[in-house]
Each structure stands twice: as structure tokens, then as C-alpha cells.
Amino acid sequence: MSHGEPNNDQGAPDGTNATLSSPISPDGTPILDRTYEVPAREALAFRLTAGQTIRIVNTFGSQVADFWAFSEEDPREYLSMEHLRPSLKRMAPKAGDKLVTNRRRPILTLTTDTSPGVHDTLIASCDIHRYHQLGVDGYHDNCTDNLRMALLAIGRRAREIPCPLNLWMNTPPQPDGSIAWLEPVSKPGDSVDMRAEMNCIAVISSCPMDILPINGVDATPRALHVMVHA
Ligand SMILES: [Zn+2]
Image 1: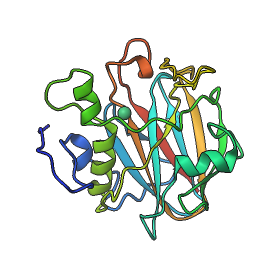
Image 2: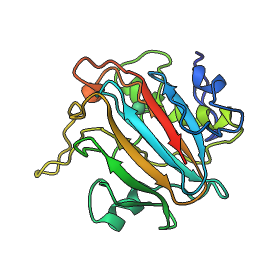
Image 3: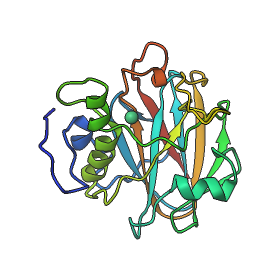
Image 4: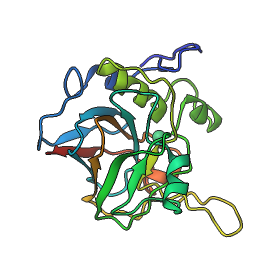
């Protein structure tokens, strides 16, 4: 790990971890049906061909997955939460929903969700600034840098940091307009399947948050598992 200096390159991480040097393959192409581990506090990028299904497994039940998807052809097009919510007229997607980009085109379809379906579409990914705000001194693994590193590891670069689909994150808006910060209601082995509607690059970060209880009451980040099926 290093504690990077501020820079003006959106694609450059503020610090690093093993994500930078452990892609699933040089260009992110997965071996179909193989189980990949996204280690606690790290991220992996997967190159998906239209029609393939990516499964994300909450192996230990309490882990939030920050999820992004970018068009393979044009990384300026990506899964966009602020375009998704009006498309669905819901706060979070459920099985059968098409997940749209900032150009309002489906990039994935959420085909199966074995969890209670509690996911967040409102909260920015954690970053070094968030941890400094929470009192951390020096570097702390974070989902924003994980996204940057997962893309760099397959020869790509983040042009921007879209709001992620925060799978299993339980931060519901309240009737009084406030947002609650709660532990996940998912159970060990719960999974979400998403079918690619266009060639795209999906990135999954096992959120390293260990201060707030969003990764469970013990605030302990854990691994996730991912498979890609034809
Ligand atoms: Zn995070």
C-alpha cells in the first residue's frame, strides 16, 4: 500500500492494494463457469459478452458488493443509478428489471435475486476522503480506488467514477427524508444473476468499510465469489 499524493487523473488510484496486480486474466476475460474469489477489500473486473450471465455470491451473507458496468465499445457509456431509478420508477432493481446506462439503454438484466432484494442505488462508493472524514489516518482500501485498479489491471482506465449499484447495502431512505445505515439483511450464499445485454466490463468491489456496520454488525469485510456462465 502507498499513500498517494493528490493528482488530476481520475483513473489513477490515491493508493494501491493487490487489486492492481491480480486480474482474472490479462484483458479480464473469464473462464466460463469458474468460481473467482473477490478477496475482502479488493476488486475484480470481468469482460462480459452480450448474453453471458454474471453471478455474484454473498458467500458470508453480510458483505456489500459495489458493482459497476461499462460498455466495452465506449467507456463513456455505463450503468447509471440516476438513469436507472426513473427507468424502473423504483429505488432498487428486482428480478426481471433491465439495468440501463447513462444513454438509457439496457446494459444488463437482473435475472435472479435469491436475497431479500435490499440493494442501494443512492450512495457513492467509499473513497479515501470518506475514510479520512471517518478519522482514518493515512491510506485505507476503498471501493473507488478498487474500481480504478481493477480497470488498470486489465489495461483499461476509469474515465469517471459512476455511482455503483451497491448490492446488499441496506441504507433505505426514511419517511422523514433521512437515510438509515443498517447491516445487510442478506444471508450466506445469497446471489444475484445479471445477464449482459451488450458487451461490457463489470467490476465488483468487496467493500472495505470496517468503521460503519454496512458490512455487518462486526464491521468486518469479507470475500465475495463470482462466476460467469454462457
Ligand atoms: Zn466501499
